[in-house]
Image (cartoon, rainbow, N blue to C red; front, side):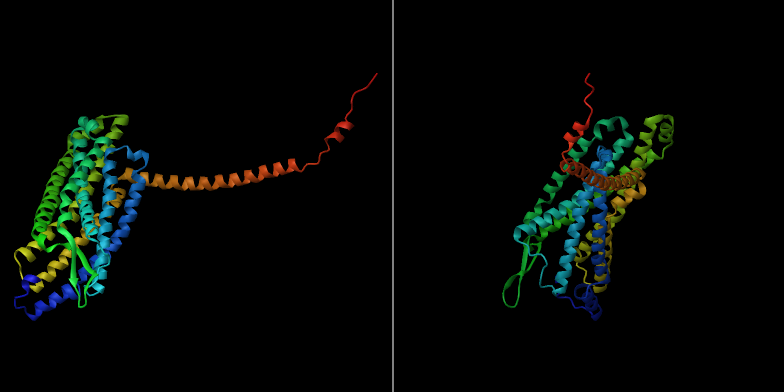
Length: 391
């Protein structure tokens, strides 16, 4: 670490620092391999999610708009994590001299900007989804007007604009850091990172404003409060009595609303369990290493190990939502099976239709050819016909 250069280190500290920076820890490799595995799982799950949720039966629901947006931004977020992991492997294999992606100054800024927009959108779409469920459960009369597809799209658009404005500082603080080699300055030795003159600004905006406030404290407070209110409504005696008193179609809608709300409470709770520990430890790591500047190799080693494990858990958050829908949501599971059956039936019907069309084509061709090549002997038949008696 730069601030530990003038500190006398023991042989134990040097060994731990070599494990961290030269050899890399086992947790670093676990995080690396796990990120690629999560990317495959996430891509397949989010693709299935879009395939199911974009069907007409579910697309007309307001909560579906949030789930579709969540699948898109989660795919973008885990894609950025996979690209970063690839760059880390390439950088490690080149002994820290080369970068896999040769950025320009503009592409470097755009990469960080889009990456952090995906991260922010994933968090705040989950928050908006939790609040939307609270309105649907606690205020059923208002939900007819508030929880609509149009309003859901408007809210998603506002979240997008908000995150784009918040993350716009990356266009200033990010850039290319080019190191001088023995011969000359090469483009391959340039890495996309925070510029040295903007380090303090980046710390304030990324660590304290974005990471601490916008990604940890506010989502944690809102989602916990909203989930407690939703669960108190779902498991209260009055709600059970009300659902039992309603009849017919109204009762089915109420039960479906409660099942959907329980499923989304599980989704938002899993989000907190996987995201908040990693985000919180990111702040602890920064304060331990940079604010307090503790120069202890053993402590640094364990901090890096725990950080890599929590980072992998955060990446899992981007890939398991659809599987949570399938496990906890019976209507999503039924729609998936219905979609698969419909696709299988269509493919079978298409194959049978093709066979029928080919057989019809051959039959029509045979009939046409038989008419074309039939001998013209009709006059013979007419001449042999009786013309009647003449008296």
